[in-house]
Amino acid sequence: MAVYDFAMNRQALDSNSYIGRKIKLRDLLTLFCVAEQGSMAKAAPMLSMTQPTVSQSIADLEEAVGVRLFDRSTQGVVLTNYGEILLRSGIDAFDALRQGIRGIEYLATPGVGHVYIGCGGSILHGFIPALIQRVAIQHPNIVIHVLDGNPAAGRFEKLRSRQLDLLLRAWVFAKADDDLHVETLFEESFTVVTGAQNKWAKRKRVGVEELMDEPWIFGEPSNAVQMRISEFIHSRCGRLPSSTVVTVDMNLRLVLMATGKYLSCIPASVYKYGAAGGQIKALPVDIGVTMPIAMVKLRNRTLTPAVQLLIEQARVVAGEMGRQNTLKSDTVNTTTGDHHAKL
Image (cartoon, rainbow, N blue to C red; front, side, top):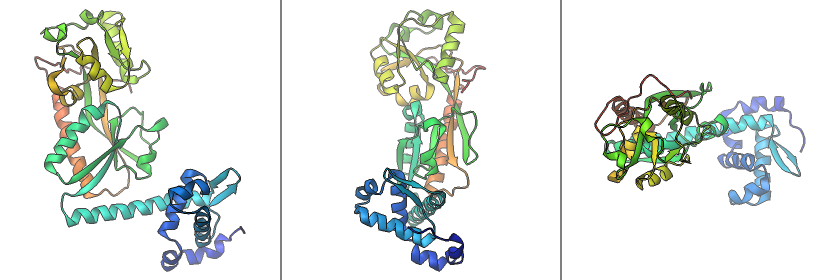
């Protein structure tokens, strides 16, 4: 393919009518898929197109914008700098269209819409169920899509590509990138929990030092919150429990604790909202560790009314949890003390 002269096409590209005639939404979708797959051959079946049709679609798009969008090789294709720019702007354009359709849907039927939130970790077992139940009562026609929200290597691709409206999760990063807005919803506290039939569940007063010879379930030692919990127990008892199960899976923890054989330290919101059936019980043991739960969204992105309603309800539920985490009761002591998990 001949090298295009971008300067010669600049005047034409500035024309909205030119863009409307030459740049097709389908060609942009083809660009997205080819860029993701790194190959026109791999993109073709995903687009329900033949490889020649995909190649022609990319060629048409390159002719329309006047520059090469992909570098080709026998190993596949790679976006050029021009292609990177068009990809980013194309994502923004499709997001604006999608948000517009969702906004029209909301205006046509108030309280209706779809919200895409990413979540990860223990928040799925406490805060998220409580939020979904509240939204279902207040705005029953809003559909909530809960997707995996664990950022890989501190990156937030799904949020930036507009696959997600929000991330709701424990905030374990020192600072936010400039394009992200982070709002701390509440400070999650922790409590020691065991099966309802365990002998310790019948005690009104328990010291953590009395529990050292019991089998515990811990998280991974490298986990920031687990490190803080371990430090707290070690400072009180001079050692850690000798018999433990190590897992990050909260479902497994709850199942094992329900047997009455294990103890574990879990978020207070998981105990309150996620442990149905009375199979486990919190012990009156102070654990001086907290974990910030945050809501993350893109800066300068217009959110639909449905997303804004969910944000309002998230703040209400967070307020209730924040107040709950400062209270003491006969069955659970969630005092946070002066210690914060160093995340």
